[in-house]
Length: 422
Image (cartoon, rainbow, N blue to C red; front, side, top):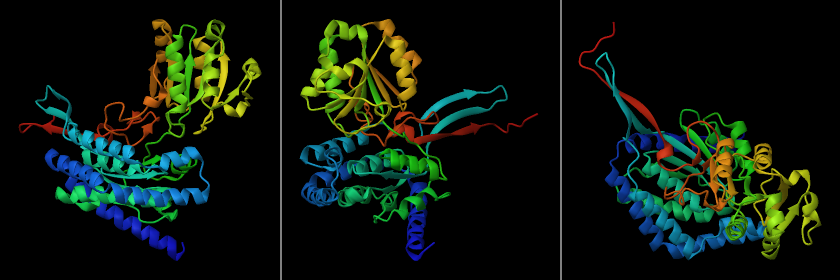
């Protein structure tokens, strides 16, 4: 290990030790102090708007020099409306019930023992993310609400914006007399910091990557601590033969075009042959008119303006104004396609047939399944969580949007009265 790597390893170890000390205090911090910290952080973002936007402008200049795509620049950009969204999220998380100390279950045993299962913080979170500076506030707020300390490692593209937002979170901690080390941010673009976090056994309890396939794959391969992650957001929309035309047109267009660079953006449209027989190619025409590049399979490739799809276009996360489209014969073929090509993130069925919708819901096991709704709703804020720290597609612990409740584990509290075991 060279000198620079040793310095980074030392930095992460020091941050981890400080975080563990902070986590021990946060674990019993009362709800009022955590609420006060989040409200003060929201106020700091509001008062610091000009400075945050100036920092973001520096990041946008850096992105332009690097030649980032429009979709990636959109993920990076902050503006007054997005800052208001961050403020609203902080306030919404503040007003949620405290998830720590909830009695999840309790029961009595014939032995005389009374047993409670009680929610408890995970400890220290390590959040590694790319581009989107709002994750700094979302992750910091959700960690604080759930009684966890957090070490944030933002992307090099957003280092100035993330630092400015982190400063607001620290102001909130300071105002509530909570340990400032509860929310820390790695102050370097050095990639060795990621590797050091992944090796931080005993200091970091769980790693949460939030970014593209390359980042998440690296974390899943190299981490020596547990990981909450989704590898990709390959979201499907299936237009069933019995879909309502106007609902389908609205949902498909929104699912693809509202924001193309987010993980809830639709990447594949499956059109039932019965829908096409009734309504023609209206969904594809709407996408083309909106400037979307449509990569069409089979006979759909004959539609003017489309591009013939390749096998690699299905099961691909474009994160851009591109969508793959194919015809299917019925809901079972749509389900089979999603099982083969999906990533377990979010799928939506457009149908007025209750039985078909139930079949879609019963036979798919993605983290989020929707009916007659845009996949862009795959977001913790839209689920009423205030924000999310990511969408988990694994089967262990949390699934779907990871909010404050999902950032807790539990312990058992067992009470006896001089009780002994035979």
